[in-house]
Length: 176
Image (cartoon, rainbow, N blue to C red):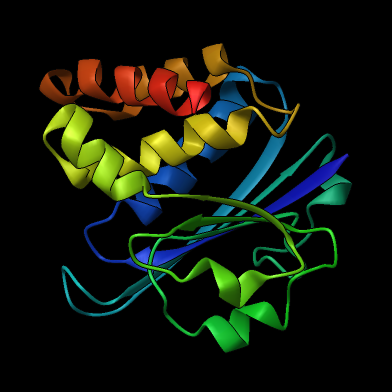
C-alpha cells in the first residue's frame, strides 16, 4: 500500500505544516513509513509552497522523496496548475480551496471543492487552520490515517495555545 499526496499553496497557508503532520501521523502513530519533502519560495509569506508526502506500508514502497503521480492533490492556491495537472492520475482525488482555486480547472477528476479558508475564518476567526480543516476532510476519503493518529501528531507539533483550535478544525473538516 502506498499513497502519494501533493499539497500546493502559498507561504502562510500551512502547506509545509500539513505535510509534516501527515508524515508524523503516518510514521509514528499509524506504524507506516513516510517521506515528506518541502519546497518553498524565498519569501516568508506569499511565495509558492509545496509539500510532497509519500506514505507506505514498507520502506521499499517509498524509495523516493518526490510525489510522481499523486493519489491525492491539494490545491490551496493556483500556482502552476497546468504543470501539476500533468502529473495527476486519472483517479487522483483533487481537493480544492475554491476561495482561491477555480474548481472547473480540474473537471473530470474526483473532486472535493469547498471554501476551506473562508470556512476557517468564519468558524474559527482565522484562516490559519484551513489546512487542518482540509486534512480532516481528506481523512474521510483515505483509510490509511485515522483521526486519532492525526490528533496525536497535532499534539506533538502544534504550540499549546493553537492546539485546541486545530483539534476543533480537524473535527469540523471531518464532518464537512
